[in-house]
Amino acid sequence: MKIINGPWPVDKGNKKPAYFGLFYCPKCKTNVVKQTSNGKVSKTCGCGRHDHKKKHGACVGYKDTKLYKVWSGIRSRCRNKNNQRYKHYGGRGIAFCEEWQKYEPFRDWALLNGYKEYLSIDRRNNDGNYTPENCRFITLTDNNRNKKNNVLSIKKAEKIRSIYAEGEHSQRELAKMFGVHQWRIWKVLKNEIWVTD
Image 1: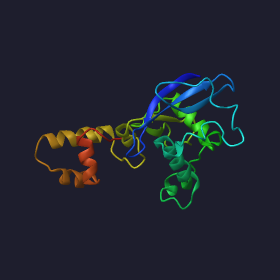
Image 2: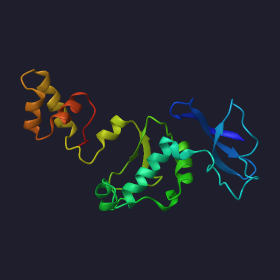
Image 3: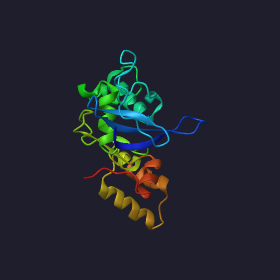
Image 4: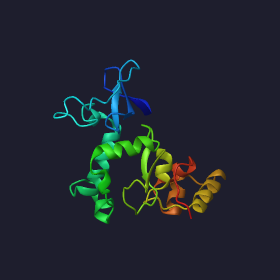
């Protein structure tokens, strides 16, 4: 098999991390996530044996991975009315595309489009659906800048920094002046959040 992406470590708690990679299986002509052991790669994904028990990638314990939890969280926010965050996603019409209803297509897309454990999934259009065309992986700082509840423009952020630099107003006073929480002022001063004009 030919490696396409990885290997990347998956934390197994108190054990040594396991390493997984995205491979191309020449026999069944599909991409599959497999655990690598000692750098050795098998010739096929195992597609010829135990087909009645396993499907591609189903045997590698991916439910413990961060990527699976990302997929599961997105799906729940968009579809489960009991999810605390449903009102911000499914409740306002944000959908989870048909292509990603199963984990494997989402996983394969993510691994081929820059997924790393330290990145967050982001929708380019905040009012758009979770689709391959509208999603990307970015840093948490960049993701915070794009949030819908981020009410400060770049101009306001620059003004806040300017006023604060003069040393005459505290962060609490600036929060009152601009009608936001003090933590938002702190984030602006650290260059972590704002919305473009």
